[in-house]
Every structure is written in structure tokens, then in C-alpha cells.
Length: 498
Image (cartoon, rainbow, N blue to C red; front, side, top):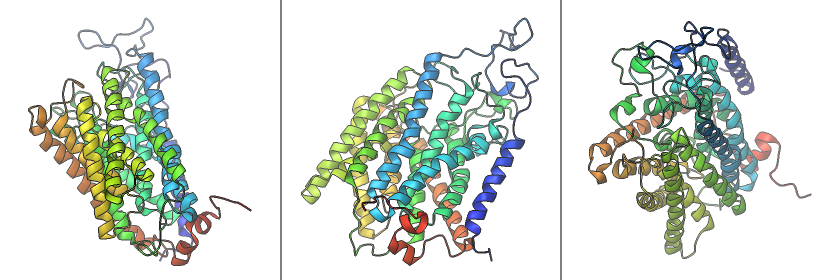
């Protein structure tokens, strides 16, 4: 039996462990501004080469980094900041407003702390697992060659990751952009477990989940390597296994929204309903915060989608346009559906519709035309509204609708990408079924459902084991739940009026 109070001590031990991992993975070789052929980082970066494949060198014998485009770099750093804003600002405020007042601080804190916890996980080993060299040439998971950001340089481009015009940004710029995606994904799950999971459990859960769900799905879908997996596996296709299959996900509909949304459903079902669910009102406590959070998400999402072009390129423009059109259409569609269904146009519904549109256009954004984006916006709202109604009828207590909006929205977006994609927007994409390539729908369906099944299975295993070993289980006591997690878990209140 684990001693009482193990939660805080376990978290401390995890932090110490990951800190030591970082210490021992520091790269003590090489020079920040002078690289030679024997530097271990060289094979992962882009340096100028002669026609015969040999490296071009300075008079001093140092390698010459491939040129960095300052416009591309500025756009990608800006996009990184926009995506970061989506979590501790947009999502935290959005979820905080949707929660009941007695749980607003706890809900906001869970989202906010994820920003720090996953930043550490990503820097220490997450980026290496997700985007590093493939382990064995199977496209399943990366190695730890880049642990501690070892071999990930700030002043030289990666020789694999870049935009349609080539590798024009420093490797660390690409890494930090992807970090923001890794941060928001487990934070999305907060909506499913809100108002009933112990805070200490949540901290440990997101580290494990990010490692065994997110990092795997990201590697399958987005990993790219240099030729032959940096020379380790001759004949390697150069992508994660669903990438080799041909599955398309421009900015994370499968990697982010399907994994988080369907994991959230598993957690909601395994945790059980909140006390009084279906018997007492559980309305959002602050609609103003809900709308403000949705607006911040909407704004930040342009970095999310247009930034996924990897450069200030033409497909960044098409992704930006598609994002705005799909989101606006989805917000209006949801408002009209709820108006027709309930007799009143719901403000929270319009905000939820906007988020559903953002979710669904994410995998398609860099591949579809403006009119296809409009259709996807309609599909998103219809599918997600129906999912939320179905969930309510089944009395699944997915408190803030992770599954209904992100799980179903991500799946609708992934399949819509297989329908409406056009290669003319992004050369490494392909046409979808509507444009003469039915295979693309199959490839996207395989990628989407593989991520869905993996996320649900691994999440169920994590939750089951944690509930068995955690003192008192992973759920707060009925008394704490009745008092509210703000006071019970944090000793704080959202509003102090006296």
C-alpha cells in the first residue's frame, strides 16, 4: 500500500527525475557558431553541400548552415506565441467560465499548470519521442537522441522540418512551435474530468498521457526524417507510419483533437457522473468568460493552423482564410440549430460552435478551398451539436464537452480532409475523394481511427492503474466535491466579495 500523502511526494520525485534527465542529456560538444563534420548534431541539421554531396566549408574549416529566412522565422515565432496564448489564456478562461463557480479556479488551474508541466516534458524527452529519429524504422515512436534538446540547434535549420520552400527556420523554432501543440492537447482533456479529479492525480496523469498517447500519435502523423532515417534504416519511407500511408493532418485534427476528445470520453465514463448530475443545475457560471475565452482561442488558432505551414508561405495564407471561414460558418450554424431546437439563440452555443469549426478545419486548413472550408464549418456544427445531444441523452458526464466538440469535431475534420483536400494548396498534400482521389478518404480514416483506438485504450489503462495505486483513488471525496474543488483542493475562491 502506498503511504498517505504519496501524491505530492510522487510529483516531486517525477520533477527531480526529469530534471536529472535534462542534466545528463546536455550537449557538451560543439560550438554555438562553429560546427565541424564530427559534431554529433550535424547529421540532423541542414548545412550547405557541394554537388558531390560533400560539405561546403569556410576558410577555417567550419560548416556553413543553410540560410535562415528571417520572415519565415518571425512568422513561426509569432505563431508559436499565438498558439501558446490559446492554453493559459483562451482555454483556461473558456473552461473556467463553463465550470460552476465553486470549481472555476480548479478548472482554470488545471489548464494553466499544464502549460508548465508539458513544457518540461517536451524539452526533456517529448520532442525527441515525437519528432526525433525513428526507433527502428517502423514509424511508431522516436528515439531519445534529442532528449534534453540535445542536437536541436538554435542557429541552424533542421534537415527535415520546414515549409514548402525548404528548411528556412532554426530547428529550435520548429521545436518551440510544436511544443505549444503538445501543451494544449492534454489541457483539452480538462473539460471531461472537470469538477471531480484530484489535482495531484491530474499532474501525474498528463505527463504519462502526453508520453504514451500524444507523442506516439504525433510521431505517426508528423514525423519526418532525413534520407534513410538519418542513415540508420536504408529504404525507410521518411515519415511516421500513417504519414507513409498518406494520411493528411495539416495542423492536428487527428493528433490533437481526436486523441484528447476520445480520451476525455473514456475518463468521463470511468470517473462517473458528478454528484447531482441531471438533478441540479450545472450551468456555466460566467458566460462573459466563455465568450472571451472562445475569442482568444479563435485568434490564437490562426497561429495554430496558418503556422503549420512551417513558413510565411502561400499555404499559410490559404490555411488562414479557410480557418476564418469555417469558424464563422460553424458559429452561425450552431446558433441557428440551437435556436431552432430550443427556441432561443444560445450565446454559449455560438461560442461552442466557433470552437467546433476551429477543431474541424484544423486537419484540412492547408489543403482546402474557401468554399470547402464553409462546407466543413456546417458539417462541424451539425455533427458536434448532434454529439452533444446524444451525450446528454445517454447521461455521459463529459462536463464541458471535450468529446462532443473535440472528439467528434476532430473526426469530422479528418474525414472531411479526405473528401475536400486539393493538392494545389500544399504540394505535399493530395486530392480528396471529391476531387478524384477516393483513396485519400481511406487513408485519412485509417489515421484517424488508429489514433482514436490508441488514445482510448492507453487512456483507459492509465486511469485504471492510477485509480488502483493512488491512495483513496483518483476522484475527490463526495464532501470535497460538494464543497467545491476551489476550496477543497486550492483553498481559493474565484470571487471574493466581502
